[in-house]
Amino acid sequence: MNPYVIPGLVVVVLITVGIGVYGLRFARTTSDFLVASRSVSPAWNAAAISGEYLSAASFLGVAGLVLRYGVDVLWYPVGFAAGYLALLLFVAAPLRRSGAFTLPDFCEVRLRSPMLRRLATVFVIFIGCLYLVPQLQGAGLTFTTVTGGRYEWGALLVGLVVTANVAFGGMRAITFVQAFQYWLKLTALAVPVIFLALHWQSDARPAVTPPTGPVFAATTTVEIKQDALLNGVDPVHKGDKLTFAAGEPVPEISSVDHNNGADWLLPGGDTGLFATYSLIMATFLGTMGLPHVLVRFYTNPDGASARRTTLVVLAMVGLFYFLPTLYGVLGRIYTPQLLMTGQTDAVVLLLPEAALGHGHLGQFLGALVTAGALAAFLSTSSGLLTSVAGVVFTDVLHAGRGGSVRDFRLATVLAAAVPMVLSVYVANMDVSQVVGLAFAVAASSFCPLLVLGIWWRGLTDVGAAAGILAGGGSAMAAVLLTVMGPPLSEPLAQVVEQPAAWSVPLAFLVMVVGSLATKRRVPRDIGATMLRLHAPESLRL
Image 1 (tube, rainbow, N blue to C red):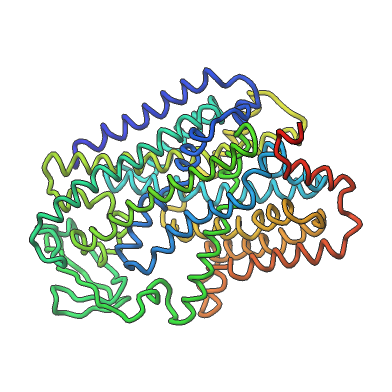
Image 2: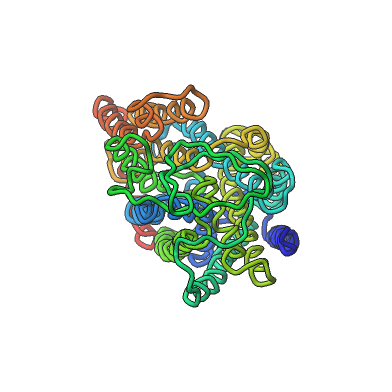
């Protein structure tokens, strides 16, 4: 085992806890715990947002997708980053000017509806838990991969560290933690890729030749994930199962070129195009509805700061996504055997040693990217838990009546308990699929609510609730059916597994029609509310 991995993980955990303890010095009131007293500067907030947004799906998953499918999946990082452009244009500044603490708060500020507030609370908790479970699961799987330890220990370790940081430091401490972890993740990818690129330039081996020496540690049966050639000669096809004995060398694997690589993403030829566009819509619009992203904009001093924060986030996220793409490309040269074993998500963790060897340099850089992966789990889990705990505190424990710091800590423990328990029992769940589904639910519920609530005076509480139930509810049902239901046949499977293409338009349509049918329920003070959302603070003063 890599001797640098365990010390690296311990250092990341200790620094995270240490920053959290430091942030505790500034957290005294419930406003500190919920929105850091709305005093976070754009630079700090942008680093914190980037730190929490760039999850395991970004740190590990994008590189794995590029390794497996090539340039056909570059729309994944494009969609993730472009979501902040929509957030910048339509939501960031007005959302901050609303003066809300949480998304349910915004619902009541804009539409004066306790019923809608309770409905929004349900969706915030569902989306937060749906997104938090795969983060903890990814932590468990990474812990098992790099240390050989038990899956449960990795999931519970991250869960406990995150719970302690949020419970004792709240938004104040988490802002410092997430900002640090963004730069750690960027460094953990940037430094090794420099050495990898220099090594690739000086390496005269053919591009399809895997590193020498890898063997199977035990008798292993693998399912082929795409059509390929073994040792450049023997054809194998997607779905074939091959058994290798312990000690048998891993064969050379080379991809078979297809006319349309995008069809590899999903079975069914042309039907895969529907799922592709559906997932693009989910990533582009889902960012606008993610509670743990939106809650950070409440921490800026004013709307102009929120807009500047979003602009900086666009630059930071765009810079970051360039790096996993390089890992995927280099993985095709040095770790092509992962295409056969299906462990493509591990390319970032395995590439440094595979390319540079098992000497001190390769092992040190491998430990560095592993530390970055841990930071990805910690930062995203912290943001998710903070947003869910804030809603549990304001809308479940106290129903908008205020409360103490002690109550916020209780809310944090309650919000963390269910995802931590679920993560122990869902080790085989498809992480990437569930993250995409979380984006689909957010895009089908809060995205229409925010866009119409901010920019259309005619939205009513009945129309908003009907749209959330129609779009978000149908997307939620699709999630439950996908994760817990029986396998579905094509083309129904495509429609259910990637619902954003139909659930998002459905939500917008129902909100508009429902509001037009209930015009009398438009709040009487809508003019003052819209002025509050759109007028700069200096003008209103």
